Image (cartoon, rainbow over all chains, first blue to last red; front, side):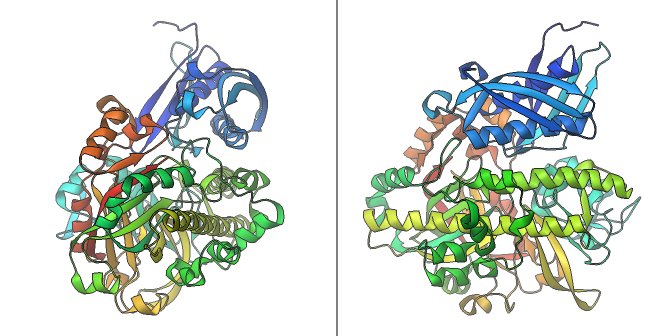
Length: 143
Length: 475
């Protein structure tokens, strides 16, 4: 089975809403890739300049609740700061995540944001390594 | 959905009998075709809801039901105050999202004559879409006053008229809101969002009253064919989203501690009488007031636009109704009038004629039920049907529901082309995001007519009038 050396992301369909899925050689990189997918729900991440750094810290009783907390922390920061993010860094120790997100203020003319993320949900919420050791981190986003 | 496991009770009512861990049957409303088109996940989710402690009578699914979060969207479930639960997932992330319909007292022709100017003025005055900010800053003790007062707070601060309040559920103010249970982050998220429309399927639309289905009801609602109305669909904005997020996580952890076996983590809930249950209810009611204040402030902006562009219009409320809520109501259960906690997730309260909570001009006719459609195909006004208190706790559908994912819609349509096609049909679209327009393409939604026909056939609500879009502001 092929091993993917680099993180990647995709979105997937869910009824009225949309799912985000990150892949990576480590759990942390899968979380970072899922965050990029979250930006992909709203706009093209390539259009977002990683010029400002925002610190993020959150906790979750298990890996899946930690992904839920991470994506929701990003949604909260996007809303509070009026920003979009395109680069992420995650460290996980036990049930705590510390990390950072780099981005810039929303520029409606340039980013053409399609939709606002209301919240990450428990639906299709999964964090697990695949048979080839590649980690997958995913859930549906309510938009 | 596979109909093999369903027992048909009548033309538009179907039952899944109690099985496994279910405490009550599932009751689905809809035509055979609507049910065939429903996702299998709707059946699964409705059966899961039927397993929750203290659920009463049934786990109900409206004709526009689709796959949701824990609860199906279009789901209705009522719980006993002593033995039942309250569920953040059963209300959803956009707490008290709803529709307000405003009578303009001018004709669609009057609007048509000024439609370009109106579209521009509305687009310029209504903050819509990602990154938009309100002209109002609501913070500190003012935020808490807004969360306690709802639309009443807005009117007291000059955003509307006293007579507006009688045309809003709970007279515009949920009396038991507890702002102290709303997190600081949720309040911070809302500081610049009172008086904003949001994005996704939220809209502000000027509409022509089209075909009248029930002339006497339409007369009571002051709807005449050819008149113009304006509808606003939005909710509690960032505050509701954050409260939903905060409490869903807390309820998931709490359910684990209590040893509550949930078939789906998204069904996370807490006993109504528990500390967490009471905190959620207090915070959720604050979000209900936030949504009511939001739609009231947007109404004020609409009035300012019409005073300037079409001053002969008189912008008056027909009604304001929410479709993502949990409300304490009195219903007859097993022959006894009792208090219950009714969750409506993507379902509209639809009180029947004679209900005491309705304002006197509407009381004899039933509660207006405002159904949002898509920007190209129109919306509907229904009225709560007599006898519906024996069906789904007096509830009805809330919209058309999507038939196609956002992915599929994006592959199929381009926003600019849709805007041009709709303009050729006399419908003006104003939106900061053409991708957003494509994701909300009219063809991505189910046939609204089939949904409202089924709601009437099932005895949930009566069709009153169809509303045809003229100008649509989308986020």
